[in-house]
Length: 512
Image 1 (cartoon, helix red, strand yellow):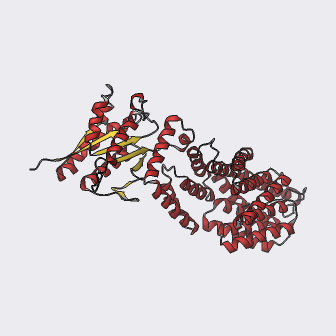
Image 2 (cartoon, rainbow, N blue to C red; image 1 turned 90 degrees about the horizontal axis):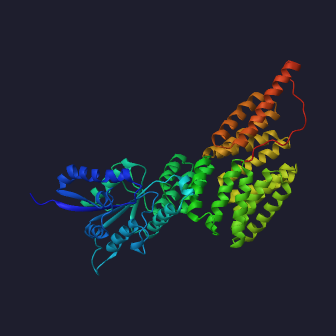
Image 3 (cartoon, helix red, strand yellow; image 1 turned 135 degrees about the horizontal axis):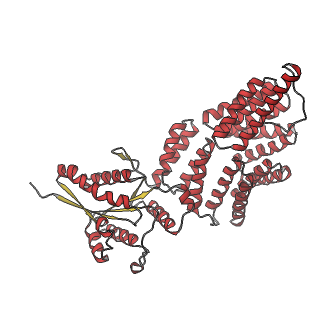
């Protein structure tokens, strides 16, 4: 029998992966017993079990020799950057030193020949979004290093959640190395989902966005879950957070935006940080935390004024206008939306112009200026129809329904709300679905169909609560409570069927 081929595998890591460190040697022993025997291959572990033994660190000279003779170099990291290494400058930790020694060896390329050993794999244990948002110096170094790998595209890296996934990754990579398989972006082996380079994550996110626009929400949700798994690509985080926001998963949208802010730098004066702050402000506004939303939008505005960045300024003015509108500061809201409209017109951004027409229409509606509101909503609708932006068309349908209801055109109002509901259902936009249930409930109330109104309000309330919009849920609950009290009073006084009288109430209706 021929002598077995030996594949020397060096594994390096800081000290916060004790469970995985113990599992590494077990994986190699398992491969040797089955897979290795069949192919006459022996995997020899280097580095991890010896270098990081509890009895103390082996000399750097011994470590260097093992790195220089390994065939495969595996780097595993979690939250720690590694032990400080003042004697290994310019590197700041022993782990970083080990990686770069292997990487420098790999980069040596004699003219006309293939690259030399070792093959390098980097594995990163998943970090909770909350930990990313509050990253300390060590974790920031890990995240920055991971982004460097993603940008370079020279080292295939993967993510894992626990010991089982880590062991699977090691097995899959070493088996592929042993039989000469080349990993391709998007490949899945042995049931293990391999985390892809950031370029693949972006491609996956772009496909997910198209799937969502075409109404394939389950496909989009699955793809976004894979694309965002551990990613620090800001475009991926933006697309995914937008999807989760539109489909009512505000908690996930917020987690992704907080990761975005951590990556871009919460105190950085950049367009990326301004965008992260603005989008987080939108989440807080949607959840009814208007003070926090205003604070974030003002921070974003200050950055965009300093850059200067006109498109960012338009977004910030519009966002502040919506906050002030919710706070019933209508004069300030009108000023913000007018400023945003001026910039959008100067930039020629048709979707932005339409958005400000719609926002100004809401202010006119709230002031009881129904003809002006209708004109603004129709202007917005015309632009959105020309751009074929179905979601925005649905929003304007809902707003026109509010106007028609106030004008006493109940049939036209119902048509608009039903159209808006259908579009929201098609796109999986839970916030829009809840809003139109509420609006149809208020329309049923106007018609005296109180059983129908309570049925629709109950659906709206429950959905608002489910998607973490407590203020809107409370507004609908008030309508339910009022209808219950009125029904009780009517039965007590008139024996049922009487229309209760009371003071004029504030305008009722849910904006999409």
